[in-house]
Length: 262
Image (cartoon, rainbow, N blue to C red; front, side, top):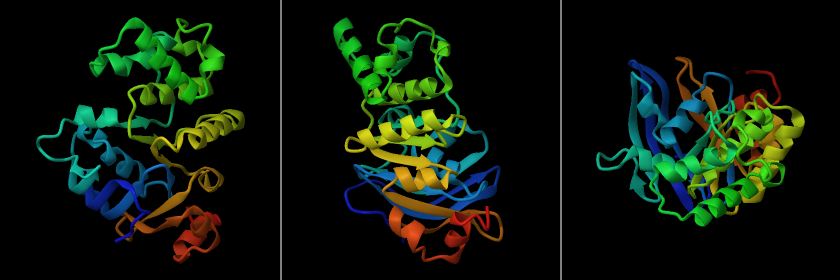
């Protein structure tokens, strides 16, 4: 089994996902450790996003999706019948490829998760929670004087950091990011990479990226996925990022990183 470092928060065992009966990923075995950033890399169509969506049960929302195997979060199988997927999604937050702020104010965007998850907070406690999340998302200084402004008034990079703040506000254990900078300019991308490094001591962070430089810069550990001959995604190797990029064990990894495939 391919395994990550110790202090595992997430452990994936024999995971397979099908869409309308067609296999998308298979034989996925990997662990994700606390206080590290793990990058998942590989060519388009190899199942990176499918794996990510499985980790917080977002695949439940896709008609025709079926998940097999086990995913343990702090030792609990998240696909057990008695587990509430909404609770899982609050503990395992997710940020998507393109910014998706809700159509209301900046403050209310960050407060949304706190309210819908039933946090019993006074007005001042709510403010403090929102402020703390915006500080962690490196956005507070840019919006502190206009918290009631519409979220759509922010730039693309600011909107994505707002979405990160929204995920962080409910104090998750894990933060999943699916190509979070794909639509952003280099300056915004650098800000998000910097904020991820600044918060990694508090969270388990998993980022899917096609950007090899981003994976090399931002992650501690790297998982490489490839489609097999039947176009089913599998993990071909995993290890410390420096080792994956300087001394990969699998020739396909070397070819992908160097741009010869993918």
